[in-house]
Length: 435
Ligand code: NAD
Ligand code: UGA
Image (cartoon, rainbow, N blue to C red):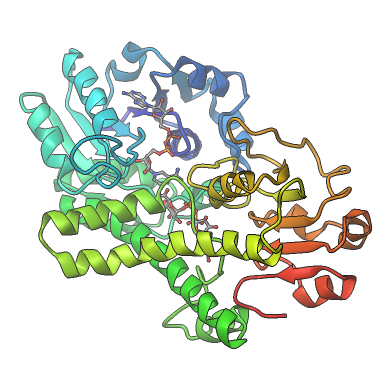
């Protein structure tokens, strides 16, 4: 079977960029991105993209109205379709058994109910692109039992901020499931991904590999953050430790930046999903091992908040504090699970006056400044939460001259030179490096 038409349920951070890149690399196929949310589709169609991602524009412009369509019309999505990617959200369950731990596949389920009702006229390859709990494929097969479908797992590994690059040059593409359909799906990727980067596995391995990959990455962040805590006690510098251990090729130098804690929509939920699975399998020691990665992350956020409050002598009431960054990392507009959410809440509880700025991110129910103009005037402290490049280019001498004294700087990303900040006159606090 020659693949002609591909659809994707879910026009979010994954569905939009993934289909745009696929459409540009596979000009002979048509790609339809379907979403139940009308507003979301309107945004894509009117170029007011719901997500901020470098170079996304270029890939949408190349393909839209040629072989890429965003729609709310299910008929347009499913009629004569060969492959459907499921790229809908799978947050942690907020209710019932496994609440706050197990992934909620009810959005996947609603896709299945839609597909089940639709009069399919040909074989359909159904691809789990969303991150799902292990054996979700069995559930899909059970729901769609009498239909001519084949389920594959093809998890997505793009990171926000580098989505287009990650999609163009993936480290690997994993396809789990029956071989014939896997090869048909691979025929799409082979149009731009070298064959040796496409890994065929059994379907459970593919599902689990996604959860494990995110858990390992989260573990790296918690590991280096745990070392930052030791460094704070003994006067070693965590940035130097990262450099020293990262130059061992067995360890590698990526994901060794200490921070105010990992955020984002996926690390926490996928890690908790792994923990829940271990607990369900009565693997308590394994569950505890992974839970510590999560505990350490919460601790690191709290530690940073305590550092701010105690360094300012527990007296933040009516003091102006400038918050730089609300997104969970730079180069995205995504604020899901950002450390900023907890830090802002706690500083509000201290009755501080917050001036918040982020070049792309917006959080609900909080007033934000549109630019850095005048933001430092009379402020007692600067708190850096996101590592936007713009923040390293601020004129900190000018800012210092405008600020109330003493002037504090709490750098949750070790973005600035502590020596320089101290020489200007700031009371500067980084993570895991004493001054
Ligand atoms: P998202 O919230 O940005 O987008 C999900 C979209 O699915 C929403 O627009 C929603 O309206 C739509 N949707 C929900 N139910 C639907 C239905 N029944 N039919 C059609 N559309 C429906 O989510 P996301 O960040 O793109 O994540 C999607 C999945 O990909 C998740 O499982 C996530 O874990 C995984 N993932 C995300 C990233 C990332 O960087 N965000 C990376 C890799 C994997
Ligand atoms: C992560 C993974 O990197 C992707 O492979 C995966 O596809 C995606 O999750 C997902 O499943 O959603 P993402 O969350 O977009 O991507 O961003 P990361 O670059 O992984 O950063 C996650 C968090 O860890 C951020 O808050 C970041 O600031 C933090 N981090 C990262 C550190 O604190 N230190 C580091 O060294 C690296």
